[in-house]
Length: 168
Image 1 (cartoon, rainbow, N blue to C red):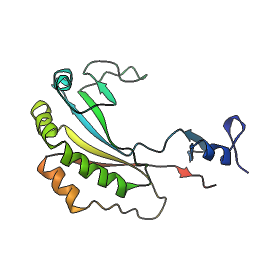
Image 2 (image 1 turned 30 degrees about the vertical axis):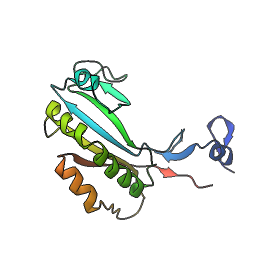
Image 3 (image 1 turned 90 degrees about the horizontal axis):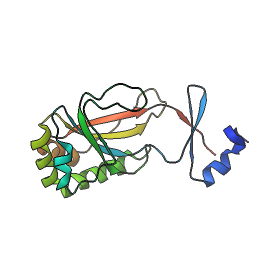
Image 4 (image 1 turned 120 degrees about the vertical axis):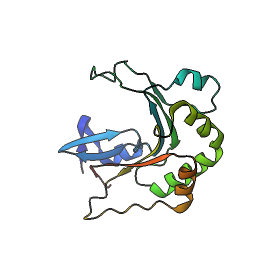
């Protein structure tokens, strides 16, 4: 039986819906799997507060240019926000893609309005996925998602996170 930091066993961690990953020799305990897909919006001149006054989008994170970023002390060079599009975990890309396509369809008007605030380069769908630790990793994005993103001029990014997931 694997014992994790704090004398927590792997089965107990699973019962608490914790995800256990090994990364660079250390055990990581996470309350959730990787956030699925998010809409990232950023621009040097983005007036995020003005946009959000009348927006139906609800960001999970807002940051402003020239304010400190996290605990690093570095300053943000852009103003932006992050909106959760899919909470499907990092092992469920197909579900993230379905959620993202539905999000784009349902929020077409808001995304068009958003573009007037940030331009064509500032809107990206970011899919968070786990590395499969194989020789080649192939991730498929269907035409429906690509068409919707293209029509709305939304970029697509795959963020691949490394670490070995522990199996029970």
